[in-house]
Length: 404
Image (cartoon, rainbow, N blue to C red; front, top):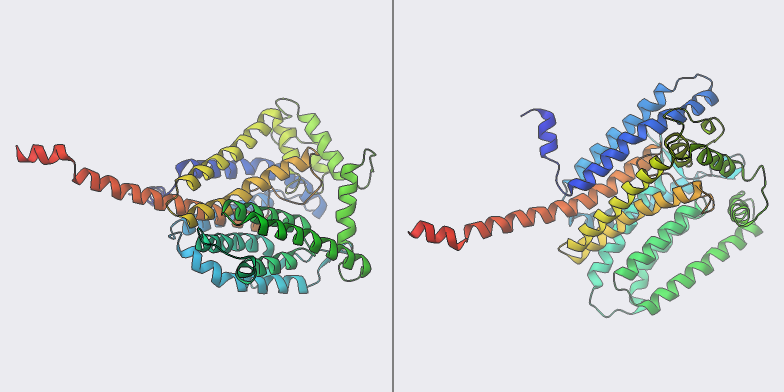
C-alpha cells in the first residue's frame, strides 16, 4: 500500500467534514492568489507566487495538525484543557505586555514564535482551549444542583481572566467568545438565573473598561474610539468616505460580481481593499465568482454546521456533545460574521473567513478545532464497529446454521 493510500485509510471520523474542509482549502487558493497581487504591489516586488506558497504551507501544517489531533481520543482533551489554560493565560499576558501599536492604535494581538519569525495570534488558541475547558466543567456538574458561588472560581474566574486579557486589543474576538460561552453554558444546562447574572456582569465590565479607556487614553491607544466609530458608521445613513472606505469598496466588488462573477483572478477591487486576502476576502470571492460562488461557499459552511450538529447529537457522552458544540460552532459563526461584514449586515470586526482567508494562526486553530470534532466522531464510529462485530458474533442464524 502506498503512503498516500495509508494516509487516506487513516482518516477517521465523519467523511463529510473531511470533504468540506478539503473543498474549502482547495477553493481558498484561487481568491488568496488573486488578492495577493495587492500585497505584492504594496511591498513593491510584484511576486505573488510567494504568497500562494506561504498560504499552501499554512494549509499543509494545518492539515497535519488536524490529522494528528483527530487521532487523539477526545477524553484526553479534558486534562489537556486544564494543563493548557494557565499556559494560554501566560501567553495572553506576554502578548498584551508587548504594547504593539500600528498607526498609533493598540494592536497587541500577536507574538513572534522563536527561531521561526512567524507571528502567532494568541487569542485564537485561547478561544479553543477555553471552550474545551468550559465543556469539561459543564460535563462534571451535569444533573447536579450547583449554586452560583460554587461556579465562580472553577468556571467564571478563568473565563473572566481570559476575556479581560483579550479585550483591550480585540473586542470582536472577546464578544464572539463571550457569546459562544454563554450559548454553550445555556446548552449545558447551567441555571438561567445565574446565566442572567453573568450576562449583566459582562455588560457592566465592558462599560467599565470603556470608561477607563476614555479616562486614560494613553493606556489603550485609540481602541475604544475605533470600536465606537465602527458602530456609529454602521448605524449612520451618512457615508464617511474615509471611515467607510473598506466597506464601500467591498460593496462595489459585490455589486460587480452579479450572478456569475468576473472570473477567477479578474477582481478589480482587490487593488483597493487593504484586507482583500483576509477580512474582506468574501467580497473578492463574490466579485470573481458571483452570486453562485457566494452561495456555494455559504452552503459549505452550513453543511459543516449540519454535520457538527449531527455529531454532537449522536455523541456518546455529555462531554463529547458539549465539546463538539463548543469548538465547532464558533467556526461557522465566524464565517457568517465575515460574510455579514462584507455585505454590510454587521459592523467591521476583523474576523477572517475560516480555512479560506490567508493567515497561519486562523488556519491552524480552525484545523485544531475540526480535529477535535473528528476525534469525537471517530470514537463513535469505533464504538459502532465494535457493537456491529458483537452482533455478528451473536447472530442466531449463524448459530443455527452451525448447529445444523
